[in-house]
Image 1: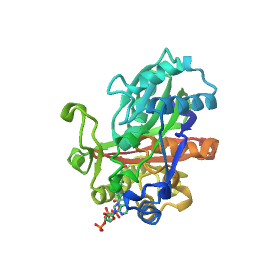
Image 2: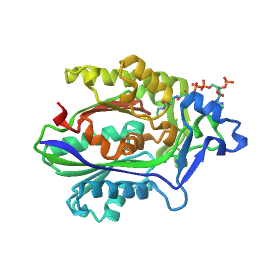
Image 3: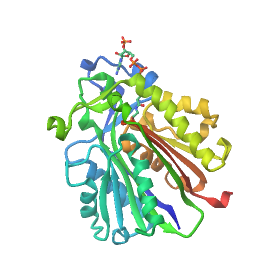
Image 4: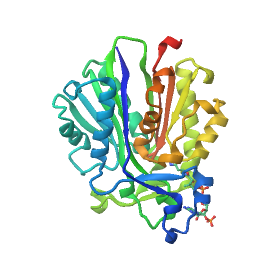
Length: 320
Ligand code: UT7
């Protein structure tokens, strides 16, 4: 049995903030942000828009694409670090709103790598026949974790959600493998300066950008090489890479180091900024049904912790 992607969907808040719309008090510029990050704009959640509401909208689109009823969904995982409540899990709110009463629902916290971590758990449960139909969602309202007076972080992030519907299928397509890694010695480089148990609040994002930048390049490439080796593939066998969208310069380095053709790498950071766990499924959703015309699609992530990982999904084995 394989876990096959049969639907995908995305949701973005209504409000867009262009680089030029950022307040003068931040003392930043479109030129600095574009040159250093590739970001041109970010979506920011307004009143009534939450991680759960964006997750629900993205999930409805994924279900509609697959033609699947919420009744058939038996697993919902939301990867997020900006859930609606400290508890219960945002996934349970999604379950209630979708009326997916047959699902088991929980959240996964692995920062920007959360989506690949969630995908791995869902894939394992489907392969073990514990579930048959899973919504795997990456969703964030990261803007609510930002200190909007700190130009070194607030210009970098945005909000959004992406959802994949996975179904058990007796076929060679679907998720081939997920590779996960963590290194807790990286905690201090990217974290919030608060949390329920330490400060009784959620805190704001703090980052040592240069250390994270260096680590991201190294971890992206390590995970990609590990995945290729495991599957006895070369970079030429890869049809599409969907990397976590944090900085276009990190993605450019990945292109140089790996030798992948530029047109095989999806870049959406200009439009979405860094949406943490949402970035990979949001980027995939930008392709819509086009993604089903590719075969070997590689997902790559790196985030706070540090956490990093890779996944190989075959969408169209007829091309082999
Ligand atoms: O999602 C998890 C993964 N996250 C990432 O991968 C993020 C990784 N890091 C990065 O993307 C980059 O390190 C940043 C975009 C965060 C920063 O770029 P950088 O080229 O590493 O810049 P820097 O931190 O070395 O700062 C250079 C200068 C500093 O000024 P001085 O000290 O040289 O005078 C900063 O104060 O740029 C200044 N600066 C800004 N200037 C204008 C920092 N932020 C801004 C800003 N606008 N928004």
